[in-house]
Image (cartoon, rainbow, N blue to C red):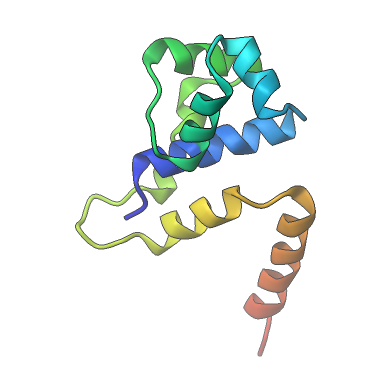
Length: 110
């Protein structure tokens, strides 16, 4: 199962990149260190409610947007979808477009 920290971190990275912010810019806006943003995005640290609230204000999103339920599994088995989400969250827009095209070809292959 993809860890909640990894899924959360992937979402933070996704929204930060979509808002065209550097880690330093995001850190400055929410009052944490650049190192903390890196830890959050890598899934090696969690965020306080206060930090989550600040992230939501910067990104203009509800808190649940940072916690993708489709990647979480309630069993002891690893969630393949959750693992894929974590991997995809680390890609930039160009890489995501390439993967999307690859998936389209794979899904539509006879």
